[in-house]
Amino acid sequence: VDPDSPRHGGELADPGSPRHGGELVAEVLRAHGVRFLFALPGGHISPVLVACEKLGIRVVDTRHEATAVFAADAVSRLSGRIGVAAVTAGPGVTNAVTAVKNAQMAESPLLLLGGAAASLQKGRGALQDIEQLSLFRTLCKVSVSVGTVRDIVPTLRGAIAAAQSGTPGEGPPKNNPGGDPKNQPREGNPKNNPENEPYGGIVPTLRGAIAAAQSGTPGEGPPKNNPGGDPKN
Image (cartoon, rainbow, N blue to C red; front, side, top):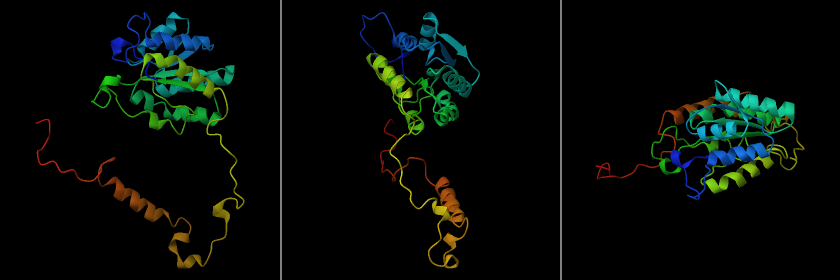
């Protein structure tokens, strides 16, 4: 969630409103009975932290983002209420991945508020600007970015409701009448096919991975023809 206030470069709401996005976040958390917010402070999330303190939500400072999420997970397990953590953008968010996975495995209701670069600066080399949502789509039931202040309240309410209902990744039953495939008899003569030997797939897989790591650039496409050189020149 990117609850930026106007002074942090976020999307503007009604200019006549006396409140900023951080205050809206704090009000939603208080309305849902949140008593603690675990965080490693940073400029991207400072409006949320200040607003939570003003409303009586105790902000607990940690020394690592994973610790903040682990603590929120513990509160969730002990109290039965949603645990909440807030981390700053970029490395602050990536540092929380392990702890979020731990909460997913434990099926704990957890809300992680992650800072982000200002909307107008995204993709332009802003401080700690990275693609963050893709890191959490396989870990969370809801992974969303808020682009406008008016969307903060409904988005937070929906995220909290989702966190407190169902099971992460829960889907229809899977039918596997054959059981574990590694326990099934191999077809044909395994001696005629090296890939059927125990661990036979390791060598070609490693070779392919090493070749891919040493060639090209992640996300790089076909060569681009730019006879004019760098367009900014």
